[in-house]
Image: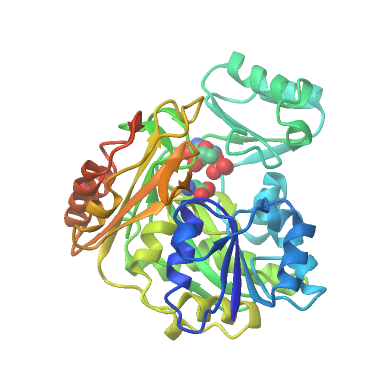
Length: 424
Ligand code: AMP
Ligand code: GLY
């Protein structure tokens, strides 16, 4: 079978690495891919929002499965566009993708289906939003409704910050149409965890828990990023609780979507806040997290292609989804300056030495190959991932591996998994 992966980050390298392990995969294409995926298949110069281009490529190249890495193509209708030509797509339909594409949609569905989430109101009038915000206790959270490249959430500590966020989103329209509608919600306090499940429209199979590290600086300081590291399992969400968590955060949504004729097929990701009043859902993603996918793929024992096809066909069963008992940890190496301006084009060395360490795999993110050697092209450059018998060993191996890798202006957090170690 020929497979096309859409996307070009660390997540897509991890997916390509796992998909390549299936002996029945003939040609593997990645659009647009990166320096890591180029070693496993053929990179295609198509961007993830080029739905027409992706569909044409899939038709012309006998693609038997398209795997959507990021959310954008799903929100733009990739699944339906492919299904018109009978090409299976791992990822939900446009309607279900609104769980990520519209925060108001997600919050309303959580409310309707009884999923615990922060109290909220939705506004499309700046005037009404402003008068509501002026009566809301601080801190409060203001979110642009649509996709805003991870920048659409403001946790306002002062009234000035709240008013400014509303003005930026609704009047200045810094996120374009994505900010014309806003969600204003109560700020929750707690530790965050990530919980994902494979879904085939009716059956759901939970994956092991993870914890991401969203801020750029150690001890969760500084700007928000796409994620600076992740590990699995997260002791804050132990295995005994997966079943209950699936019932709380995933099943109400998938059952509702099935009941209204929009079954969810793919990965549903719940971003959780573990509060003193129990877990609450902060957001849904309709895809694997990045970097969460990297430590998850390191632990996945079963064949990913079979799981994905089962999700598409509606034949998913828990026995087909097995994970290693080992713990995994991924440390993201970034370009200094990220998530703001950062240098590019740095030559990367030491990946082979890093992978010489037991159970280490280096997933490439913002890279491309130049004369066969990786150079940086993005803010998040590598995801250095290791397995270990416990979190301490996985973390030690990942950090040992980062020390073998060199590129100018590299930066990584030194405290990945520390929270987990404190609990384990
Ligand atoms: P979201 O895209 O909705 O997950 O928001 C991005 C990040 O903002 C989350 O990972 C949290 O760190 C933070 N956040 C979102 N909503 C809330 C909330 N209601 N209370 C506290 N923090 C939040
Ligand atoms: N790492 C968080 C995300 O993928 O959205």
